[in-house]
Length: 232
Length: 145
Image (cartoon, rainbow over all chains, first blue to last red; front, side):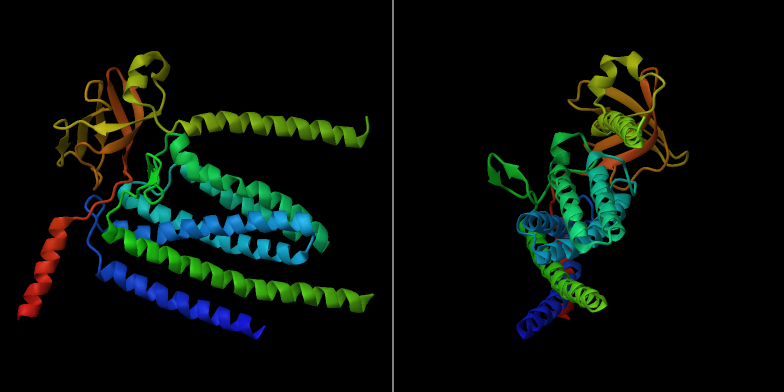
């Protein structure tokens, strides 16, 4: 358990130092992007946030399946806390997107396929926590939430492909752009390198929140179990 | 009739309505904008309807009247099929010739009267080399002192 504490402490200071370093790099060391100008810097929080959102809900998906298969409560605890952190990243994603949209597009919000499917993800996982709250039996809660979690995560590939499948206001992916079978991000290395660094830092931050929250969640379940045993 | 059967029938009706409505909405949503060619091909279908058209701003067609806050330009996909657009409002910062835009409004005869003008950003990012150069020169001038 002591090693877990050390890992969490390392992630905490790693993400604080990383965020500070990226902030300095982005605001002092980078050239201005030619078409958008200064608002382009919002990219360095918007893009890492969506990568973290994708990862968080992929973890929900994988651990929900693992729970249904093995019926070990630990898997459900991880899925739950990852969904919590993912929901916060998803909210940040929508907010930073709106702040970027105002100066570039001229509007905070449009009902295009990319934005609507992202909002849908947010609403599905709001429902996910309502479902968890409404069931009192812990095992039943885990079972139902795993099913909803798996279904909800199917929205992720739809979000990712929405800009290719449908006509949207949101532009196609810059970072994951593929040309003739090869990955070729349409952004010069000067602007790309800090973006990759920001993504790494955001993933560290995600891992930090996940582990921290998992510790408390595990203890909460242990405590509830003890209480139930003493009552019997 | 048993309560359970009533619930099942009621649930099925509600589910069917939800599915039907969302499919209808989905169809609208998935076509966020039409192209100029689609709009001109069937003018009857789009008359008196609020629609969005997405296209590029034709080079040399922009007329910005800053006094009256009126903007007019032509939009096109290929440089051949053009629709003149009139917009009463402020010109967005990123609006320029050759830029992708999405306009929302109504067709009035051959011209499109826009109530909203959105700039469509491309996924291409480039460095503003002139800004970078002037910044470097500025730093050099500080160091020289």
